[in-house]
Image (cartoon, rainbow, N blue to C red; front, side, top):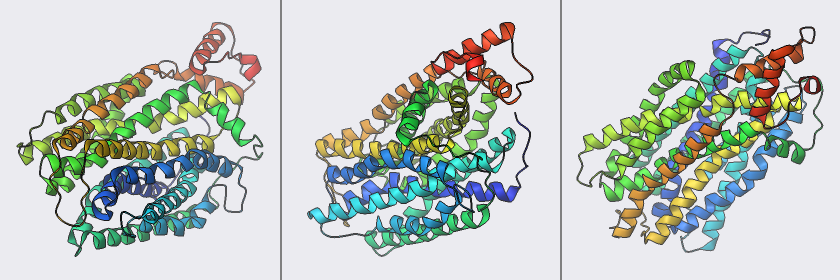
Length: 485
């Protein structure tokens, strides 16, 4: 695609990829355990617990894209992105640990205020490191294949973090003298690990970035509105948001499903571990399929399969054997893999299409919006599930053994783990169908950008006409080669 600035060493790829271990692990722990912790350990009502998460996400709607814009315009001896890894490393660990402290009686409004404040602090710390981190990859190398390899390391660590979060936290909690002590110990262990990850990233990555010569002075709001007019990006938002909402619904609701419907709470670690291991193993199959049919069709195929398996969860009897439940988890893992393999790999194409239209590379801004969507999916899932549990008559328990739930709550738990994901994936599938960058037209983006870089080799005739037509179709705007070049 372009001449290579440098090839990246394996250690650089490993260190960079390790950053999304934090992203995958912290998001998964919260999706799997935070709502349950607030309802069944602290004793908050489900709707109050959902409010805690929702308030944090309201702030993210502004701070994530704003952080991307700030990092795009940052200048320092250490680069645009790396300084934030140092400044936010301690808040990252402390804020995560604060989430798991049993603070005050559940009936007190101050208890809700505490968890809301702790969650907002966690969200801000997450934003401060993850948005610059996501925007860092293109600045480490300008080689197309090296960037692809670098992103694959990132996603591998993300899934490794999610897998670790599916197994280790619950193990630490179960071995503690009490649930509340177990959650505190878990928060401490992971908080220290997260601090180390970001300090290591700072000291290794500082000074390795390649910042543009000219600082982009475009204001935040116009830049954000411009990005949201990107037709391909709007489709990608539908794909990414609604696919990851399903992951968060499954992560959040499985503990309720196993505890109160199947009466197999001890299977939780095995189920989530099996699902994520298979998701990792499925990645290579999805990557191979993209080489044959493209990313869009691969996502549609994987999503259709995923929907088929999800529909079977509602049909499982509460007398089903543990083996059958594990088999279902394995089959679900194959479908889950498509949500990790495809959406993030579509983002570079969307950014390049934006570059065709605007002449600017705005990795930080787009990464900020995508990071917000990643967190939004979790909060929407938690809020929706907490609301549905509240209206279904769900009874919150505390440190003692789980209570007997009413039939209405059991039915809601079953519907949430099957019908709700099916509705979300239907939206993701429709968004993929509308995604304008296809397997057979992406090369026009590259031809255009290469022409912009090499004006001595102009494109004329029928090739010029085909390029303008396809770029206009993809972008939803009239593209004229002479004007945009």
